[in-house]
Length: 213
Image 1 (cartoon, rainbow, N blue to C red):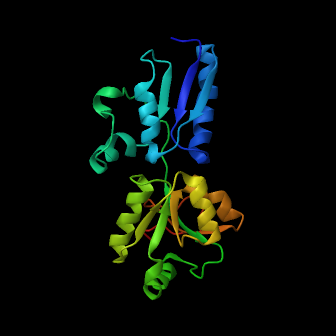
Image 2 (spheres, helix red, strand yellow; image 1 turned 30 degrees about the vertical axis):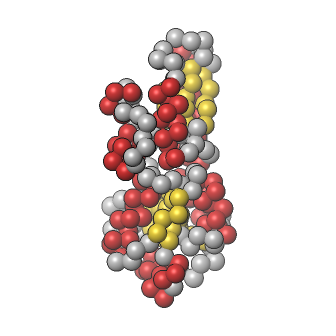
């Protein structure tokens, strides 16, 4: 082991960074050594995965990877430069996320059915933002497109932060990310969450229906 441990966070900012910082803090005491977080955003987590693959094989570097990196990316992209089965050793699941579908605060849609109706009258606006191509929000958008019978095009961003700027500003008509990323902006009135994933309503958003409602 080296004198320092590293937690690679594959996303820049947002809830993932908060989880990585919490994890690093909890690791310091039992390890009795410094633990720091390095953000390696890009390519939906694949940049961080490569950083982990190329790190010294001494056990001092761990990465917080979404399931899209080891499972979906190899089935989606031709240029994946890692083999999840041989290059990584899984440790544990540390968090799970539910997702939200949101629009700008000044968008005319007050509900998800309103948004679908708006899309039908504004077909040139049939696109949505996601934090990365090949991410779970990306594929959730694909599933939503199929469910409503409207082909929405994904706009991939380099993380949640730039997506949120365009979403709040109305540059992109809708966006999908984790509830934890969007909820504070929803509460502050900067954007409006129209629906969440899952079979039950989010306890922190009791007035917001799920797509299953």
